[in-house]
Length: 260
Image 1 (tube, rainbow, N blue to C red):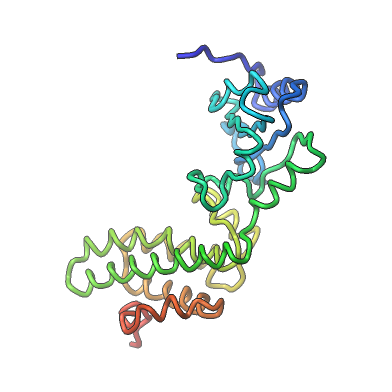
Image 2: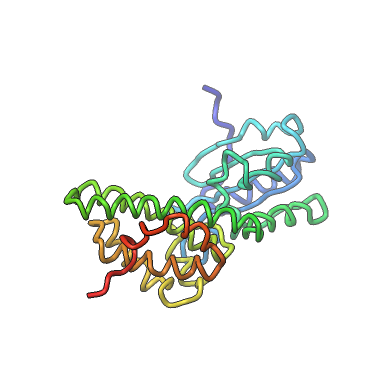
């Protein structure tokens, strides 16, 4: 195991300042990008560290490359090359799951005349074609899981229906955010996003959507599942995804809110 290099500082802020000074003095570092709770107003706590991405010209440009995945109570580092930073989080990247980390990220150092900021801005929202593809794929997966769940409830297999209901929730969120060309937030920041950057429409407000998701996760309640599907179906059809829904044919009747 390699020795942990010293990153001095008595507090998270002092540690960050010390490391930023060290990185700024290194000509191999072309960018510093701050992410995590520190870039979400109101989210940091007394235990919050600083999540920092260190962008190098190339892997051999700086001894700081040895600090990739350095962790302490004050600082959490990801050290990547400029080429890796360009593609990180974008379609086709195995680390696509990490894209939300860049949505509200702040540039602390940009030695490339704004190029770091430009690359970062590309990651903040979904491009039109990207959003359409992401929404279509997530929508189909969501319908599949919800249909499996409601079939199990129909057939008296409630426990199994509950499992499929829980698995449908991530796909529902991916769909709704992609329909708005937004990157789905990490669960920690879901309420923060819904309150500060509303998706539009009361059914997607934090006060309405979060209780629905919690009920589905709690017990898979079929009535609540159908209410959520009704909203997703309306939004998806309005966005031009009728073909995806249409491929399910008459099976959609099981998913739609039922008249009393």
